[in-house]
Amino acid sequence: QHTWPNKTSFIVNQAAEVGPDGFSDYSVTTVTIRVVDLNNHPPTFYGENGQQNRFELTMYEHPPEGEILRGLKITVNDSDQGANAKFRLLLVGPSRVLRVVPQTVLNEAQVTIIVENSTAIDYEKYQFLTFKLLAVEIDTPERFSATADIVINLLDTNDNIPKFSSEFYIARIPENSPGGSNVVSVTATDPDSGLWGAVKYSIYGSGADLFLIHPTSGIIYTQPWASLDAEVKSKYNFYVKAEDTEGKYSLAEVFVTVLDQNDHPPEFNQNFLEKTMIIGAPVKIEAVDEDAEEPNNLIEYSIMKADPDNIFDINTSTGEIKLKPYIKSMEIVQNITKQKDCRWSVVVQARDRGSPSFSTTAVVKIDITEANRLKGPMAAFLMQSRDNPMKALGLAISIITVMVLVTVMISTIIYFRNTKSNRITPARRIIRKRPKDQRSWTFRPWFGRSDQSFGKFFTDDETSGNHSSLRAKPPAPSAPVLPPPPPVHSRPSERLRSVPTVSGSMASRNTSRSSSWKTSKNTDVAQRSGQNKDGSGISSALVSELKMRIEQKINEANQGYYY
Image 1: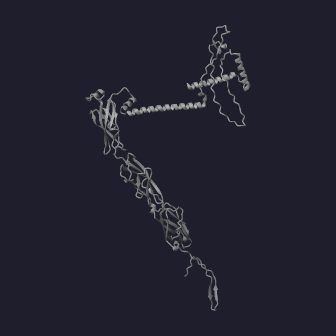
Image 2: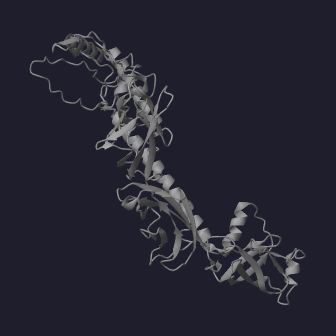
Image 3: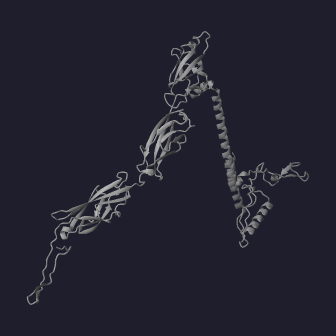
């Protein structure tokens, strides 16, 4: 018997026969033998070194999805032929983590395993993953199969950050605790292995100056030199940081409350107090406790001793002292003691509600008086000022200071207003004195006169023949002198242009009609010469009218400003 693998047919070429005469006789024919395959071989897995049913791979956690596990060299084969060599591949293990390609094989194939879920390949959950690779025949009665184990060993990576057990921590510590006192302990964990899982603690922030933290244990304690005082500051907050070796970190906030201790007694402003009491109205005393919290800073008042006794009542919460209800007039007050005085003493105690409790006392001199005629806030202020004269002095100084400041402000405003106004219209600063009427006296000789004017003096007005009035009207005020125009530096190429101005002396509108012929003639000559010289055709009457209006405007402005 011979075995010819993979052979399905055989051919016989010749058949020979030898006769008696020594001659051979033969014939040639073809015979075909077909070998039918039997399903007698199961699928088989092969590795690099031959047949193998266990495969191992070492890789880092969280490979990217879709990555091929190239470290696995797997081949699957079925030696049968045809339908007997068709089988299916299955990967059994953690669901939807890896998948196998191809899923259907005919005879032989290279097996490929691909990452499907990267998150599931986590070293912190599994240090290794185990899968079974199955090859199962399809559509054969025998259903031969093969199994191979796939083991994936995972390596850790620093894929986690330290995480605190809480997002914030609340701590309380009594004030005046010695330096180095424990405040609170914080905890952070890093699931990574080795050095990647080691956590180092530190604190920072504006309120962290008085505190320290142990770098490995996470215990927070006060600085050796720190002194916590609830009256100075009772709330602190800062941040604590947990960091691994590669610098990955997380934060948590710490709130520290300094608990108040009753370490301050109540205190009065003075041990000896003077008060003025109006009958029917209380007087108030007040003590201050510097403790930060209740009940350490709550004060109760009581009368320890009074002279005379059983005259006053005190409000234990507010410290208001008042007379007994039956004392309603000065007559009753004066009849209480033999001296008929109205100035009494009271010893008042102020005690806090802390534990242990502290107290202090003060002597209060009370001057009893009746209500005066003054009413309202001023009366109350004056009565209070009797006990505190510096308060009245301070008020008087404040009023005087305000008045001085208001006066200075008003003067400054007026000064700057005048300065600004003078810069705009400098002519308003000029006030000219109205000129007096200068009269010339003429002496007439006595001879040659037959009338009664012998030996008299006459003015020019009298000689001019104007006898309608004893005195001529004074001339109109003249215009103030205008400031000179600023110098204009023109270019050589520019032509100088003359600016027409209004000049001349003022003349009264009501001039005497009995002027001499010589004066009127000179005026006509001056008008003609002015017209010929300027060529403007403006008469002297128009000039006088214009100048008079200008002067009237200036005078009105000056009168409105200075008066």
